[in-house]
Length: 432
Image (cartoon, rainbow, N blue to C red):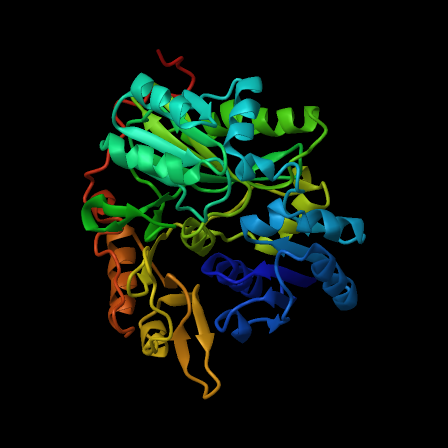
């Protein structure tokens, strides 16, 4: 197949790598605009990811069999629609369906209609409404920008003043105030063609910037899979009670959702609750989930893009565990410093990890430098989480980036057996 992947980050690098290494290849791979890491596997094209007309024109020129839209912004901008209108198969929801991520208020409305369990919420458009909602729920306060915010539009805090300040900053948009959900969080990607839903394996990411879940929220500092502590029956329950009803509701509304429904979950003492929906593969969870996928990724994505997902045999998974650690630039997630040189990637990969580029560029003199907040994702695999952690961190230690930082505790608690979901009701039980 001739496949065009849209995007620039580590998620897109992970997608391209999985497409390049699948047993159904070789495929002819292209990316727009891509990054220096993707360039080793695919031909790059200098096309703006959110320009639907330009992406569709490129896909026509390439005679692409499949276009995979990675990030949320192009999906919300309608890039998948433009590609489909050009007569080319596109993996990713159209503009109206992508509103499941583009508007948290819209997602709440869909969940209510589909009877999907989620946090109680107030949708606010004024400071007075925000203050009333904060007082109604109490601390910890959960404040969400209604629109896209690159994974950093959410504040969870016990400080009412901080919560109110974040809400004020977001009030050019709608603000969603939610009840706080206790319990561990889980990410589950569900591939769908608008009717059939096929779940991938669960993962967990770490959003806070520093060890011990301290510091500000980020786009994600690392992730791991599998989740040895996850309750049996969790995936089946999520498909039955959450993903399938949501896909069915979107179809009922005349805006079918085809692509990846990213279900962010909290396993609370009252049962499974949806924290958020995203309309694409998540970053950095994609890095570990695809590292474990044995079924050729191109087969799955093309089937979803052509309404043939029901014909795909059950997915096959490698028994090994995977851990990814994000190497972030100086200042991230605040004021990020760009231009620092990156060395040691080849030495890291010689240890057995694979290194995925997120925020990098090549200078005119050929040097690789940092060009974003999250710069690299280092992915290690092993027989269990402890071995995968050891592999990932051995790779991280080979990489040099002045002023960079990374978390040292990704998957640590899970590898020690310190994460539990013992209060989670068994599958099929009705939570109080």
